[in-house]
Length: 296
Image (cartoon, rainbow, N blue to C red; front, side):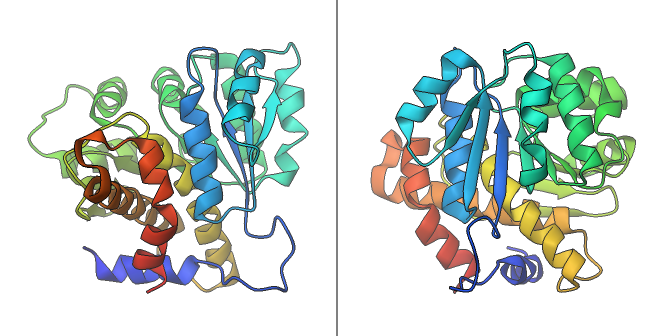
C-alpha cells in the first residue's frame, strides 16, 4: 500500500468538531436513478453520507423516487430527471452542492447530462463520472475533457470503450501505459481503472491501490466507490485551496482514498459473510473501515 498517499488522505479528512454547522463537511449530489435502476444511486448516496458528508441528494426520475426514498429516510430525493424542465430543477440546487456524482443507475440521458455537467463545471465543483455517465463521455469527450476537478471511474469494459474512441486500438498488455495515455487524451483528467489493482492516474504518474479486498464481486461496489469519492474529492480540493495539501493533485489523493476504502469494506464484509457478501454488507463496514484506514 502507498503509505505516502495514505497519509495525504488522512490530512484531508476534516476534524469532527462541535463548532461546525450542518453542511460544512459536504453536500453531495448524485445524478442517476430510473425505473430499472434504483439501487445504484442509493448505494452511492448512502455511502457519501456514511463517509462523512452532511447531506446527500439524489436527482432521479419520478418512478424511481418513491422507491429510493423507501430505502432510507436519510437521503434527499428529487424526482426531476424526466421532468420537462429537469435542467432548471437541478440547476437551482447546484449552488448548494460541493460535489457531483454522475451516472449511477442513470440510463442514457445525453442532452440533460451534458448541460448539467457544463453548469457544474462553471461552479468549479468536483465531478465524478461513473457507469452510464461514462457512456456520454465516450460519445462526447469534450463535455469533461481538461476539467481538472473531473474524475472518471471506469471498469475494464468502460475503459476499453473510452480508450478505443479517444486513443485507438488497445494493447492490453500494459495497463499503466494505457491509463496514462487515456488521461492525457482527456486533458490530464484523473482516471481510476477499477480491477484486480485499481490504477489511478492524472497522466503524469500512476499510483496503484492494492489494499486486500476479496474474491467476491457483487454489483454495487462501484457505487460505493463513486459515492465516497464524491465526498473525498470535495475534502481534497478544499484542503488544497486552504493550503494544507500542497504540490499533489487533490483528485488523485481522493481517488486513492476511495479505492482503499472500498477494498477495505469488501475485505471486512467478506470476513463476516463470505460468499453471501453484498454491497449492503459492505456499506455497514464503512465506519470501521474508514476509522482503520484514515483515523488510526
